[in-house]
Amino acid sequence: MISTGIRSRFLILFLLVCALFTILLLGAYQAPSGHLPSILAGKHGDHGKPNEAMLTGHAIAPKLGNATAKAELGRAAWKVLHTTFARFPEKPTDDEKEALRSFVHLFQRLYPCGECAEHFGKVLAKYPPQVSSRSAAAMWGCYVHNIVNQRLKKDEFNCENIGDAYDCGCGDDEPKKKQA
Ligand SMILES: Cc1cc2nc3c(=O)[nH]c(=O)nc-3n(C[C@H](O)[C@H](O)[C@H](O)COP(=O)(O)OP(=O)(O)OC[C@H]3O[C@@H](n4cnc5c(N)ncnc54)[C@H](O)[C@@H]3O)c2cc1C
Image (cartoon, rainbow, N blue to C red; front, side):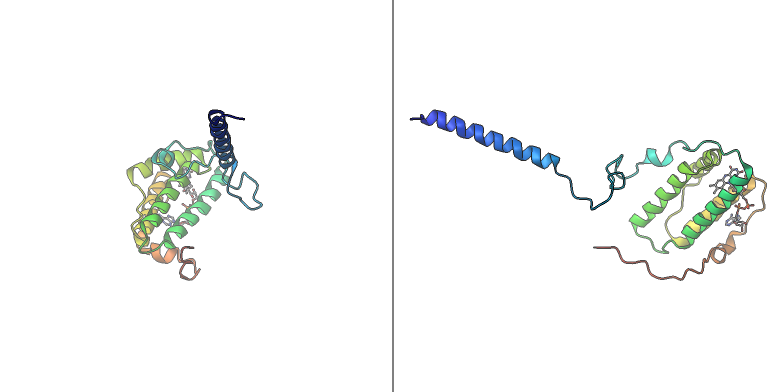
C-alpha cells in the first residue's frame, strides 16, 4: 500500500511535469504565416517601429560616381517624392503624419547615392519634413528640392505652381478605409 505522503509527492511531480510541457509547447508555438517563406513573414530582423536614431542615422549607400545614373535616379526620386506629397491627405491623421515623416527620413538614409543622402541628411536636420497637411508637405518638398537645386547651380523652381506641377491625373479616389 502506497502511503499518502508518497502519493502526494507523485501528484506534485506529475503536475510539475505537465506545467513544464505546457510551457515548452506554448514557447514553440508561432502564429501560422500561410505559405510565406519565413524571410517574408517578418521573422528575420523584425525590430518593430523605427525609432529616432534609426530615422536620422548615417547615410547607408556608398558613393555613386556615375553622373548619368545619379541624374536619372534624382529625376525619378524627386518625382516619387513630389507625387507622394501631392497625394498625401489634406487632413492627415497622427498616424499618417508619422508615416510620412518616417518615410522621408528613411528615404534619405537609404537613398542609393551616398553623397546625395549625406547632404540631404543635413538639409533634413535643418528643415525637418512638414507633415501637417498635403499643402505643407508639398511646399516643404519644393523648398528642399530648391536647396538641392541651388547647391547644384540649377534654376530655382517657383513653388507657387507646386499644386499643378504634380497633379498626376490619378484621380482623387478616397483610399480604402482602414481594414478592421
Ligand atoms: C534627395 C536628393 C538629393 C540629391 N542630392 C544630389 C547631390 O548631392 N548631388 C547631385 O549631383 N545630385 C543630387 N541629386 C540629384 C539632383 O537633384 C537632380 O535630380 C539631378 O541632377 C537631375 O536634375 P534635373 O535638372 O534633371 O532636374 P531635377 O532636379 O531632377 O528635377 C526634376 C524636375 O522636377 C522639377 N523641379 C525642379 N525643382 C523643383 C522643386 N523645387 N520642386 C518641385 N519640382 C521641381 C522640374 O520640372 C525638373 O525638371 C539628388 C536627388 C535627390 C532626390
